[in-house]
Image (tube, rainbow, N blue to C red):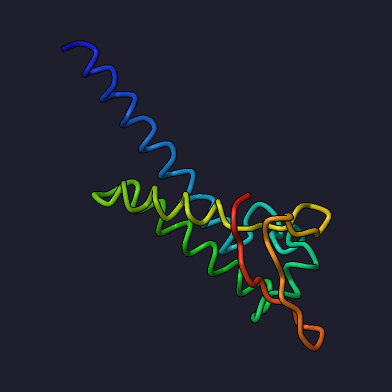
Amino acid sequence: MESNRSLDSAWWALRVGLGLAAFLAGLDKFFNILTDWSQYVSPFTAQLLPISVGAFLGIVGVVEMLVGLAVLTAWTRLGAYVAMAAHHQCQPHVDGQIPRHCRARCRDGHCRLHACHPE
């Protein structure tokens, strides 16, 4: 029975820690508290966005705050699935190159992420 208590306390510590981390990261992205997050978006990614980089990061911040709240409340599993899905999308590398398993479709100088399939 003692191991169940230790697992329960570890589960709560992770739940609170990860929930707060996601919520605070989203708050920071939404309000640019610690840094101007738009400087970390590659130019290639900025070209793919149909909206401004600032608006995109505001949306990302709201999603991160919602994930944090979901993890902290009764929707822990849903928040974990959303966080996992969001972080496993095709993200261009630091040098602006898209991973090999992602294809971009470009027409008239506008590129959109067409498909992303794991290798």
